[in-house]
Amino acid sequence: MPSPACVRRKRSPARTPLKVEKGSCAEPSSCPARNLPLFHHAVEKTLRRFRQLATLHAYHRENILFYQGNRPQGLYFICSGRVKITKEDSGGRSQIVRIVNAPDLLGDRAFFAEKPYACTGTTMEESRICFLETRHFWDTFGQDHEMLRLLIQSFAQKLGGAEERMHCLAACMVKSRIAGYLLATCRKLSNASAGKSEFVLQETRTELAQIIGTTPEVISRSLAELCSTGWIAVQDRRVRIKDEKHLREVSCPHNLLA
Image (cartoon, rainbow, N blue to C red; front, side, top):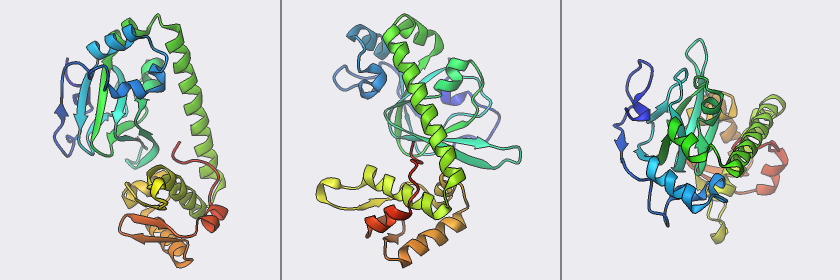
């Protein structure tokens, strides 16, 4: 069977070559998949079978995992890295609808619905992702009722995140969305132990605009405006939160990172 990343519509290939490591997922003590909430209550027998059947793939930034319109052939388990989920409209314009961070499942909605992917999945950085073929998934987890319960719980949480994002895009001004996104990203990436409110923005201006729901030009103007108030400082992609109190007052309360 071909690598899952090679099953795609007729388009230009990924911008960087795909690296694939085949074989067992990892050693029992170091398998990153153990960090998935799905596996927290799994018995060792289930974990061992997963490691035997799953294939570990190492991806560069901008490698395509699957295209919008393709049918899923299995399920992805993100061990490390990030994947952006983009939706393309009839005019060929793409919108980032979600960013999936490790550890998490990927492509699960289409997989369980037995429908084509509604979006395209693209890595945003060096990522290590396990792929489990459909037949192996049901052989491994089909009779595990606790595992299926956790999957339903995961679906419910993702639905809640999608509802929160939709409300944010409809109810909050662009500047409020950017302020909220910067605060959420700072909490996630900054060196909290050192008391620093500073981080490197991992998205390009175009990617950030797609996440926020605006244009790169508006992103640049809004960041400049927040800099002029003295609430943040930006140099290239490095962002420093200088006045968290005022930034929080204008920020959107919804989580665009969900």
